[in-house]
Length: 265
Length: 221
Image 1 (tube, each protein chain N blue to C red):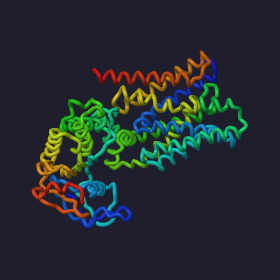
Image 2: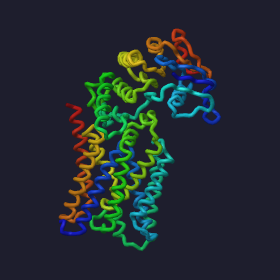
Image 3: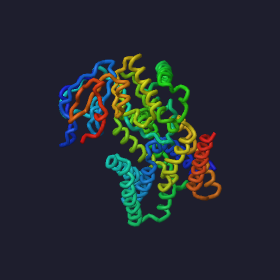
Image 4: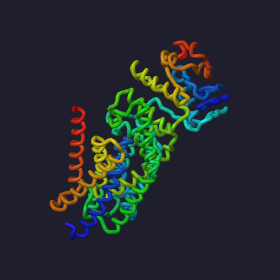
């Protein structure tokens, strides 16, 4: 399958997508932000269609929308009870906007399908380069802030008590989350990018009990998911997202069963 | 040593407390008592630098204060093991010698808090007493000279409370760590602490622990 250039590019892009999503996902799950990452995917859809409408790239539109809204959500609602409701409201608004922007622009509906559901053929060499730069940027941020971010994500109250600058960490995290959503949506689509941002990490949580091990398992499961998805999509011509989400869901339930099995033994 | 002079705190128009004057000496084991909402946690936040006083001064002889907060977000699904949870408070280092020192420190703290045997158990599955010990152990990592416990015994049964307080007492005796124990527990106050700081009518009164009575822990009417 690597005889085709588009497959080579899709392979490189999805490898980096899986690494960033698997890594960021560990912190999404530990900060209880699965719902926000879902909403950011929808906001990303609106951003991409906005990008098409005004003639900038869909990726740039996505980054713009997800960055602005993740910081807005983060600063508007630090209390989790209020966060749920305000995220729902924002999410409804953005899906509506996304549909509006698409209908106003002259692009065909197949383009919308690509943004929403992902595609392995839609990605060009130039876009792969952009993805790589963004992914490396996200990974670097995580290397630099690894220790304080782990403390704040796995023990927010303890981190505050120890005097960490938790507000700054929260904003740093939201920026990387927004970028990861924009990166991931390029292959798996904006509707399902949250699959990669939540399920592998949630599975890892049931199997291992340290932050580095969670990252290894989560990135590993994301990588297997996208590689398997790409291969199966190539030979069956079915959507790649279907295979990725099916694999991650099965892994999640196996992880959950493993945890329950260990508890009873 | 902690020396507080004319300390007042307001949130907007609401006065939390005013004109607090007291001193806590090195090696003291004191209790901070008073009804809910009297300003105990606010005072602690000022001591550790999370809040600023509206007026007055506070001097502490040591920069390293270990604070064990009242609540933690740890549910039964919480993934990290007890040791990994404690390690969250370690400073990052790539220096092999420092890493070795860190590992030694973790070992010592686990032993000191009696957590060595269960260090690999997920914290989410630990009992209430084990969790409190883990929170305490995490705060001990920075080698604090002052330790503040915010109602750490609140949800524990009597036997476990005593175990935890015995441990804190040992830290106080052996390592001369100053302990400030915020509590609603009359018996523990009497048994473990010598002096008490009593919140009353929006100010603080230092009293001998023998003079502490049960009604001092109840709601202001």
